[in-house]
Length: 239
Image 1 (cartoon, helix red, strand yellow):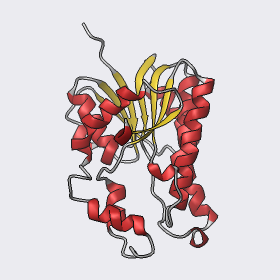
Image 2 (image 1 turned 90 degrees about the vertical axis):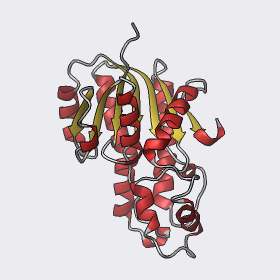
Image 3 (image 1 turned 90 degrees about the horizontal axis):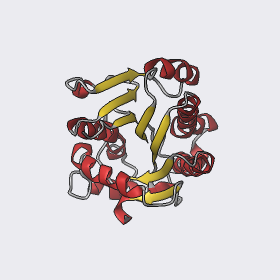
Image 4 (image 1 turned 45 degrees about the vertical axis):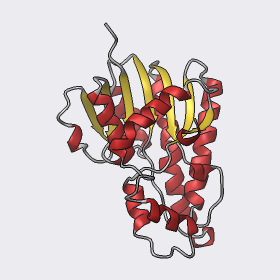
């Protein structure tokens, strides 16, 4: 009999995290979800365990995660999906505190979670850090987000060297409709931020599927990522 897969996903209350959790659960996996809000759509699954937690509250993560995962000895897949966009503004218009908030959620909360899990001696087969093509190129308006995703890429690369028993990837999921896209769709200064206009035009087209529809494609990409060197950046559109 095939062992039931154990999956831990952050940011499961909406978007990509919700889509992935729903797909894995429908395939019979045991899924732990962490998010600031309840994932009501997933409550119907007996194999779903939810933890309502703000991952940027580091002390709470260190205390509550060991209690929540007390009997877990191995995880097949950890998806570090929770993240925020931050303000779409030129760098000169953003204060350092706003940038720190984006880095806190998109980078440092992932470090604390990884350190906590490894400190519990949980064997983790694969870690996916949800990245973005924005990590590789500078685009007006995307400064803090791009910097945070570049930081996440390096975080995955460093942990890959320090934990060779676990496979790490920085994974760009392509264009997927999510809460972040909802924020982007409301921005009116499209002449100032050309990338925003392209994203707005892609929404509600086949070029930007919703997270539920995209989940099987992403999961296939996770499996393919195991064929790349641990610590690599991979883009689902180029695999």
